[in-house]
Amino acid sequence: MSVLRKLPRLTRLPLGVEITILLVIKIALITVLAKTFFAHPEAKHMRMPTASVEQRMLAPAPTNTATPQVPTSPE
Image 1: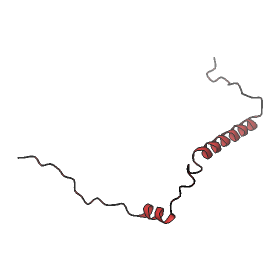
Image 2: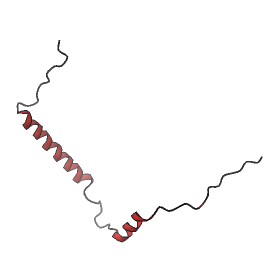
Image 3: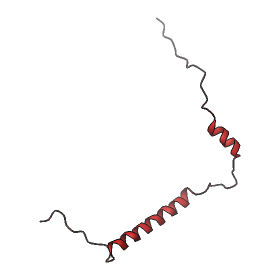
Image 4: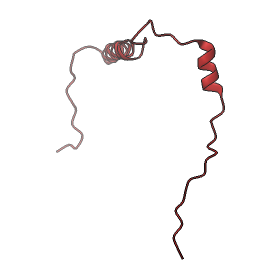
């Protein structure tokens, strides 16, 4: 009994052609998913001024000057 059995091929095409077809299908599916979910904003009329976005993204993080109130226990 052989441990490694030969799996049957799905098509009778040459292996290179079969791999190429699968790669084309995979690229098509990835493209459709990318265009569907990541391509454009949902509302095209909603635009933000570039200067405002740059200022918000490049500004240093705000520092918290308030110290947390720690309750003291009576001794």
